[in-house]
Length: 333
View 1 (cartoon, rainbow, N blue to C red):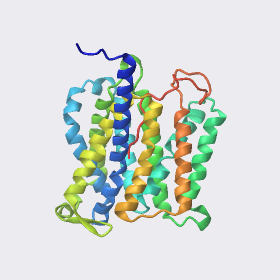
View 2: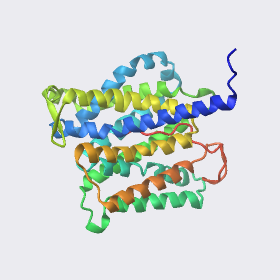
View 3: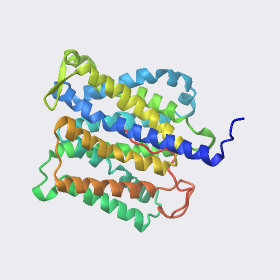
């Protein structure tokens, strides 16, 4: 006779699988910039790379969009906002940023988003923010000052930094919209929202990027990763299938198996993974102060992210308690 499996054992296994999926999602998202930058340096405009990524992923996710077509009637505002901010906005700003500044720096700036969410809670929703949450914001901003080495007169491209900050602001929209998407009886299936978000993002980017002006011949050639030639279509396939489709799906499934805070903490590894991959594959080295600053940014982001309560909570942010959770945090880079 088979030995019965206890509920605690099944729960432990489920969490183990969830942690593994969250780590895979972070690795997949973290590899997007490393694969995209060689294509940009080979001659593709950053917006064209973004369009290829989003349009390709939308095509792959089209069956899920058809399956969840009722979302068009029930949550049109959510789908439009998700597509404009969480997909088109984040990806366009991030890819434009990495064309001007190192991948690791761009992603660390983008990880100011959890701290910016606290600003939304305090000044837009007018809800109190505790001292712990404020500490997280201060740490994130202080760490960012080290990452960009402000003492050297802001040696990085100012426009690149502004674009990365734009990606962070758009990611705030991702967190806020994800929170609204899980409300009550009208809760939207996350996979359906992702599928339609990609379709909306692809439609918007088609108008903005004008892919008919793209130099398609770049995709038939090679791009160089720190001097090593790599087939351009292989990099594009990685961006679409791994860094977008697989990254989103594994991220959503991991959130279902873990608490949102735990999944969000693992997602913070994306910045670390992206920095290490850029160091190894692209030769983008960060100085010791930048590495320390990056660790401080992630620490602040962790504190800020774990401090955001469910909307039903009337107590100050970071007041504690297992019910104070975002409904579906994640990453969009």
